[in-house]
Image (cartoon, rainbow, N blue to C red; front, side, top):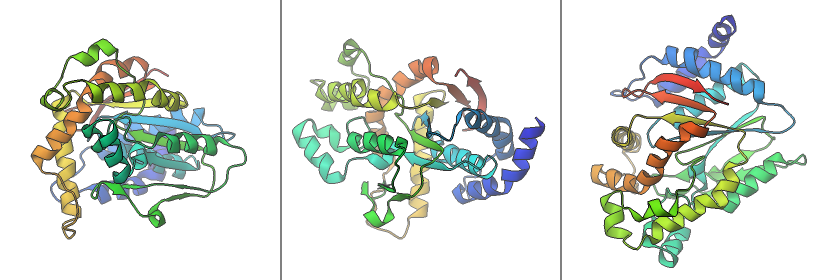
Length: 308
């Protein structure tokens, strides 16, 4: 405990500064000290013991939309860098979305619903596999990696891409479907929401997405050294949190009229594409994730269960 207190005194200022940058006038973080002291610092001690500097340690961080993956992964990075002096690189699976042009082509070739970014099959999987391979190489050379701009639903220009100059000690790879597993084909026959019923009557979209999870994504996720899962109580809570996120995006980008900010109906409709995999993760991920972080309905960490 003394170690944790010492760590907290060293990282507190930077963590609080980051949290402040994420707050809006209406949306303030509560119990931030408890979150860092009781949960994130012990988690960072756990990671630092596992990380060896010979090869990057891959941390998968998963959780439904709006669970706070970006905030938590950013705070973990601050603690590991500041206190443990580790070189940490954080990237989201979202940054590897196919370009809008590629998704238009995919939607024409396979199924119209694949125009909507999100599900496995809408990421550039070869780019991710290549990134994993290159970053493990002893002859690591500088890497440029994409960043995705959700407000325009396309990648940022290359000048805004990540520039990874040195091989990291820890890589935090976060995303809503990180570590997700495929379903049995028989489960795919039953529709779970109005979108599947109306737009995927022949199960082409469901089968395509499931096949991606079963093959290339399985290969990618098998390379993660550990998996942390942010578990919300249910899907309707995620919808509420995701709506909050969109309002924040709107507040931060009021001046730009070109942005594709979603209204309430758009968000709820968009989330139906995520629902099947998210619910499958609710059910199965606690069985195989290394660490399960349980969130209460107020969006705060309630408990952490270590299994790895």
